Image (cartoon, rainbow, N blue to C red; front, side, top):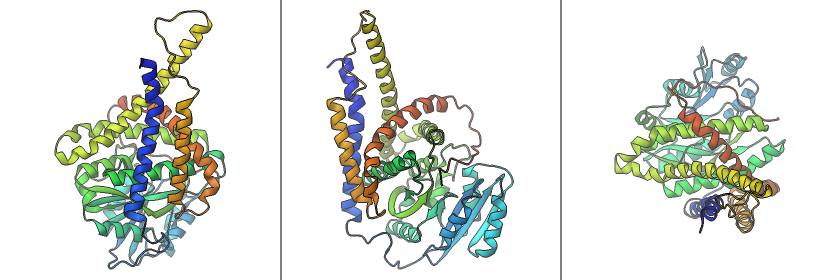
Length: 420
């Protein structure tokens, strides 16, 4: 096998291997954990209902607040409080939160005078929280009425669980990008989290719907103020502290996602840069106690994904140079005939794999979201978008993370919420 053949095998083979890995993990999770469980809207009765504090960090969320807190009032759990953190909003978010608190006895509002960033807002909310179990949602999220019950049930099943990640579902689908992202959260992210739960370690909780024990956060050092992606950073530090993180798919939450190319690019670039920064930061800690060695495969997969992204670009550039030189009648000192941007046998295999992945993911997720079959056409195509977007953001995110310099407090701006 020459170099170009090896590069082609890596470029097409890595997504294929990861797809098989995710599907195997999803099937194992389905068989081991959820096959005989009740549906998400009919949770079992808990023997105990420990109190829960729900943290809602808000920055310029005025447009979404009515929906978000109306959903929180419908939560079917007997003992919970809601803490909204107004993180220096420049709109009327603070005033609206105060008005909501006047009519919602469970709600308390914490006001920060200036934009301190989501991590600082969460730390402030955790400090104000009265209870050991913390659930966190974003200011645009609609929490399912039974989500708290499922989260608490999972905590009660294993005292070693320090954090849980819930199951976010897309609720805005007005554009092609919105419909494609339905495929991402079903056919890719859901399978990834199921697989990682089965295999032992998660890359990250979903920041839009997650839950923590205060003891685990204390052991991890709480949320880091300089983290670009607070969810990735705190997930790794909790696991490095010896706690487990698992996926609870029945803890549903309906969210808004970007529906413009610019908004999607900015969101995913921040994810890529923040994830890479975390991988750089945690690298020395991976090699200390044996208990931390379990995180090394997840870390290595992230590194391989970045290497794959750069290989794809380098291979395409080499192919373009090869074609241009041939068209001009110049012989190059090296041959590059093995890799083509137009998929042939490998492309057909990968396409069939994506179709199988889409059908499998829908079979698993149909019990959480009725009518998912109507999105099959978009779900089949999303893996191609996912890998293309991952390659582009990884290429830009790596140098940005390496050149970031001295960590500073990571403030935030309101993301693209899509077309409503």
